[in-house]
Length: 208
Image 1 (tube, rainbow, N blue to C red):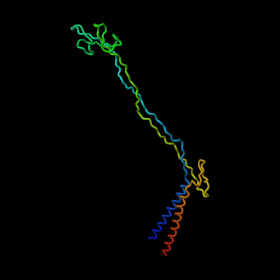
Image 2 (tube, rainbow, N blue to C red):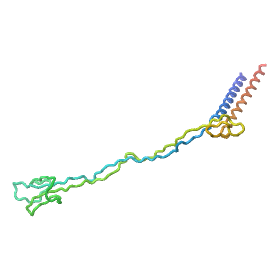
Image 3 (cartoon, rainbow, N blue to C red):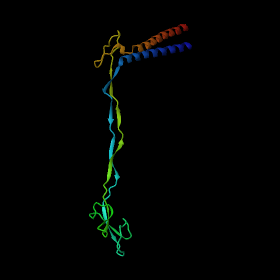
């Protein structure tokens, strides 16, 4: 029984060795591939995305003027009246014209007994522009565009020279083929076959 187990192991070694040799020889003949760059990689800069806004520092104020009318049930009015409220009379607002175009606040027109007025000079709006960043600037890395080109070898060289079969005008030398990797499987296959033959012979001799 042990002798049959030994024979079975020798058979498996032979099969593995021969299969490895065939596969290695086939791979040595199939392809020698190179990577070809169609377009180089590049860095694309993207500017920031922004928009402008207006920031108001001082609100605009419309100009106006007012005249003061003392109450009729009182004696001579002694000013100045208080703006915007004075119990001794009433302020009447106007938006255009009026006396004292350059005046501001409460003022009197006339000498001592003249009417009282109030003027608010117009105030222009004060503002500035600010830039708001919606998206920061960034650099985009674009990888190179490549493809693979493979040259099929018709048969491995026997004399260490160049191969006979090439594709695309490229010559593949024997140094490009993995011969070393295919020698060991061949040796293992032959060794397995030799051991297999010896084992079978011993089995038959033992039966006599």
